[in-house]
Figure 1 (cartoon, rainbow, N blue to C red):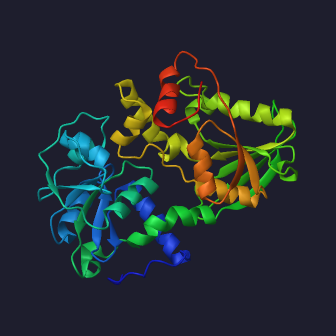
Figure 2: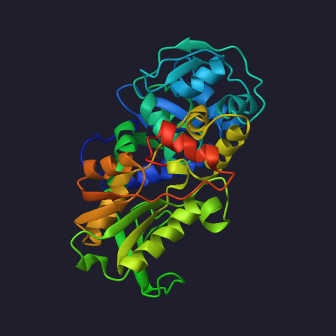
Figure 3: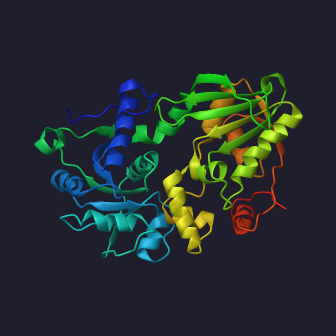
Length: 373
């Protein structure tokens, strides 16, 4: 492997998308990758890196290693307020690098916090891209990072490591949405809508598919009713009472059947985009007293990480140029409009509290601005 990197900026071609896909896979395995930028870094997720990964970072680094955290997670680790004015906080690590278990505790607030003393240092310019890799891998966005030695690829330890441009990681979500294509369509009669059809969409990462549930012929209407619904394993499938997702999904299908047409976009963006495992971690923090916003932030995520460009791309492929959006969330309307979708009306979609999700719904109204009650 040559110690040179492609120039970012253009749409990602096959070799570069393949590099992002492999970087995501390496991150989930705990294998370090080199972040190609003006000042290259060797990085690995704190959640998955093991002793061998830390050894490689130690050998190939050309300066002090740091644990990169979002400001909200760093505030919990440092036990004092940290301003949200920077994309990341860098906590300097002693060399040789501390053990992997300690790093995992620093990354995961649901674990017992047995932490060493950290010194705050200036984060590298590439910190945002490093954290982006953790998020793309659906891991905790906490990364071990260090400047990499010149000529790292020519060393025996670095010969098999992947280099991925930092700019490609940051551009990837938008490229992912633009690459969506229909891969299957079939009638699936539903209890509430006998004329329903399912259309599956797959993106270039060949990951989990997004689904469109069409009732009747929404494409024949000027502005059909549309629900943008993020998948919820616990609510949609198990009937969890912690949220209102199951009633919202079934209620949307019933409402569209009553109107004669509509579309539910069922997006693979569990937990507002943080993934199922991280959502369960957030639940654990909620049980300790945090609300859904602060729980996500304590894990290092934003309150809402969804990529609405995916929904916009699906609507375009379905020929739905104008829509009435079934939602209580004005920011969802704003997000779709920012992606070029013409939303002619927000249609309320409210369900009464069930005695378990009362505080969850109150948080939606207070912290997210949902129009409830």
